[in-house]
Amino acid sequence: MIFDTDVTRLLGIDLPIVQSGMSWASSNADLPAAVSAAGGLGTLACGPMRLPDIEAAVAAIRARTDRPFAVNLPLYRPGADDVMDLLERLRPPVLVASQGGPRAYLARFQAIGTLCVHTVASVEHAEKAAAAGADALVVVGGEAGGHPPPDLVSGHVMLRAVKRALPDMPVISAGGWADGPGLVAALALGAGAAAFGTRFLTCPEAGVPQPYKDRVLSAGVGDTRVVGRGFGVIRALRNGFTDRMEALERAGASEADRAAVFRATTLRDVVLDGAVDMGKLEAGQSAGLVDTPLPAAEVVTHLAQEAREVLARLARL
Image (cartoon, rainbow, N blue to C red; front, side, top):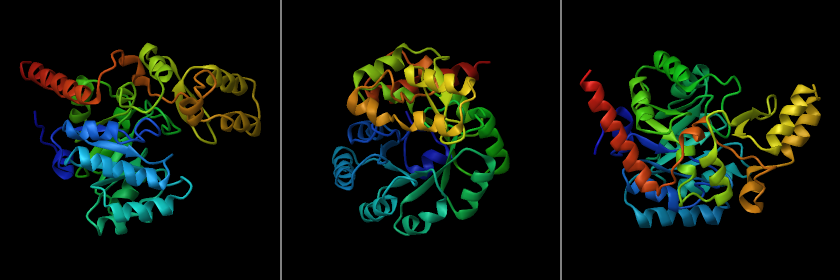
């Protein structure tokens, strides 16, 4: 199955399916290589990775598939400049950057033929990234796991706002998508592809422990919480950590007290120490739509087949 959109043409992929860069979950070669080989765009999340591990993972992805793949770089991570130096040498097909301004990297990567996709969560930032010369945008909505926009504007509203402002800009919509109908909805709203994060979180290739995956699989659509307003908003599955944060917010605790609790635990604690009760179980609202763990390639195939069935049904209306 091949779809033809501005994003699939730009990135050289068969399907408008992008696997979001997820720290730890896709900080390995297995998940992005499987997604790219299946016709989507797999993304290596190098936020928590050491330089030698990034280089080894990029080499492993290239050994497993000749299809395009992306590397995601949060620009705020420690040592971001060193990572950029390494990536400039490695020349990934696509760079997806987030948490920073595009002028920090655009010229150097476009000069070596790397497509630059910038992550935004507002019309203002989308316009700035487009003006700076970004090749495409990831537009994130409030449903997204991890770091949604603080104002929590829904993905479909933000997507429409960005496309109204920048009708000719290739856009990947992120936040809230979990199935083929969602993919078709994103395309109908003006995106050239949809990004799926939580949907791939439960794949066997995802580099997070099984208890984390089990929490995602058992979650309902109302089982995520948004905490950390004022110093680093995240959306995560409800657990002891989010309960404590919400209790502090209700009690009117100072920002300093809330920040101390917020920063005392990380996603790393979940992945490496199994802290599923008091760690940051980052996940999107679409966790409530994910109930079957599948290998990544099967997820891609299933999404595309569902989308084809929806398009066929719509054509009969």
